[in-house]
Length: 395
Image 1 (spheres, rainbow, N blue to C red):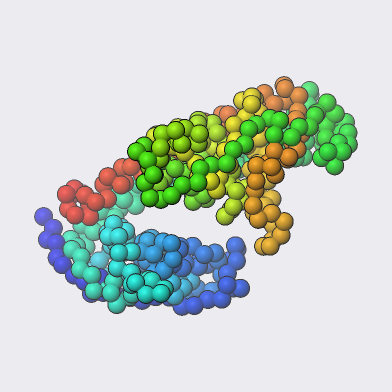
Image 2 (tube, one colour; image 1 turned 45 degrees about the horizontal axis):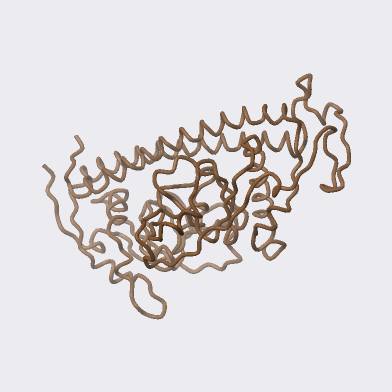
């Protein structure tokens, strides 16, 4: 049986220090190397100041004390601590151990609170021998790899759905009666004054407000104000997901029962962020507990389910347009009135039914993959503390 020994964090590290400063102008959405700061990934740049394997610890910001395992080349900023263990220990194992320790509790109480390299380096931890560390990390890493593969599968499915919407409802190359792309094959187009563009003959237009209901979420205090405990979807839960709401990190709040009833999230709802990342649009599926949505979010319920996929991907397209706008232009916030006044082109029912059939199949595949990932995450969360304290042994 492996013998566990006590060390300080600084004692096991060949490097334990913060990164270097970098100008905001040097960080962009594209680049050769990721830039990590106190809140995680900041963007990309063309130079790196780290090459290897380590734990990245957020020193300041909303994610102060957050720990992530990293391997490769990156630029580490002064708001991140780089913890690189020596040859007698395993970086992946130590990263998982540090992630359990709530390092944020050690941040200073100055005007700009944050983690001190000196303070963290003196914290004591217990570790097994190197072989045991490697075995434990390999088990956890295998689960992480399965989650990553599933994420890639879902990204491909999402891209397929987006491409289908673009072909059918932006380029109007849906299959005509002969199975050929409508517009590219010479299908008749007519000018629509509301959209200020041509649409296929036989199509109509309608405001979103005629097809769906829109409602702002609940404004609440973090301190308990009632006896009923409910989950709440915030903007960060939308930003951490792409199609379906990520339920792994929902906050819990206490409300009066009659207050929560007006803001309950139902299966199939479409949620749109009002600010922060305005226009970000997600679907609700398979909620595990009674859940409401915050005041920074607008919920939409369609009047007829036949329009749900069309409205969802129309709004996803709006999200993409807003995301690609340069800073400081056009829309800082999304409101109910903005949404209800948006005009969408409506195809004949037979076209919409064909579209729904394909999209429903893709969405169901995405759901299945997400279910698998939730199970993998639960397994990882269950194994992690037991592997880190020796309750479970890997043979």
